[in-house]
Image (tube, rainbow, N blue to C red; front, side, top):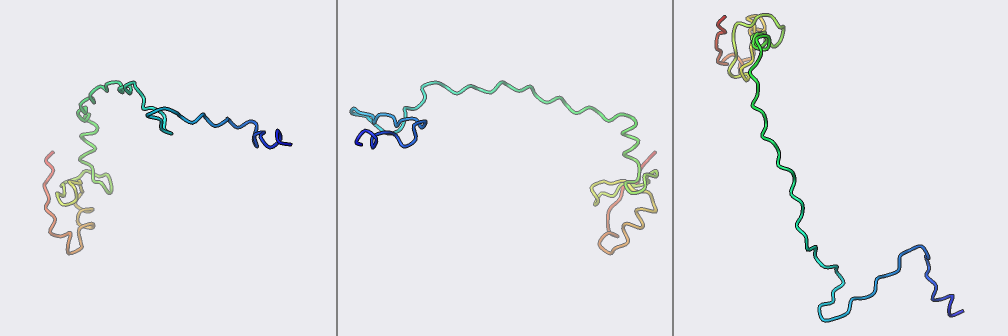
Length: 105
């Protein structure tokens, strides 16, 4: 009966490690003695490519209707507008004072 009491409750579980002994014995494992690996050096990002002629032309399209724009609105993050869309979109009192720059063709 005494041997049955000493048998582990879960036979597949690992047994507890022996308690450390000695002058500097602690319950924690020793710190690693190796240096961590350094990540590989990354290559610098490539500079942005200049816009193509088609992209440059698209910058001059109205952001609302895609017609040819006639002005940029500085207060709308430089968005391009045709006359009609700018007039319709800037009717509110706070939008009327927006500063614009004409688009030269």
